[in-house]
Length: 258
Image 1 (cartoon, rainbow, N blue to C red):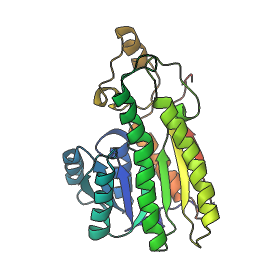
Image 2 (cartoon, rainbow, N blue to C red):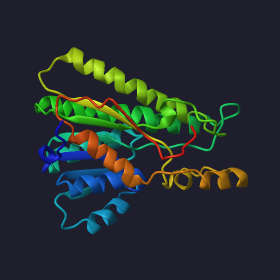
Image 3 (cartoon, rainbow, N blue to C red):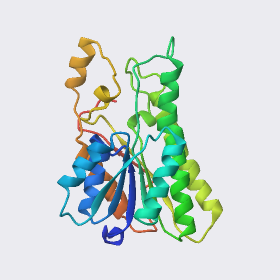
Image 4 (cartoon, one colour):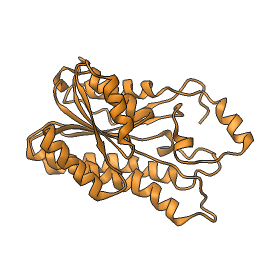
């Protein structure tokens, strides 16, 4: 099997949640590989800052302000991409959140926020990307940034609906694969799931997740991946030949115990 990113040079990729952490690392990796990357996030100013740092690279990063949990934002973002960059060849569904909450006496709005982002936002972005790919005869790639929590339920107090949302991503990956087979449209759109273990990102701070002092100290001792590790993993699945389906890629730090 020959691995190459050459066929993606000059093509358009959409990366959701691109303002920090894994999303920013993926956006930077794709720019290095020569793609035109639309980075979607609420904090688009952070994407603009990263774009300036990447000037002179083979590709280019474009900042698009969008809240993935709001359908009108997603639709507006895809219209902007079509009008300004061209048809989408790659969608990286990276945007995802957790909330400090519980199932026993939880806040409904916090549950809804997680599900709207991690599940419905992913579905809406996927639908819009596939519309473009089918209309333009593009053998495109959809990559869902999942989690090990999409395959097991870690014994982590306060996880509440987060593992359920990621288990949904696992199911949606397979469901979409089957739908694409039944469509038989003559083009090859593939869907892939990349499931990281613990990654050293801002997720706790960004989502205002409060840990007890004991849990916070315990969390700091966990083996962790870097965002760049996941960016490299995404580049790997994108570099496989068109006839290859890397359906699930699980990436854990050495020593992770769940």
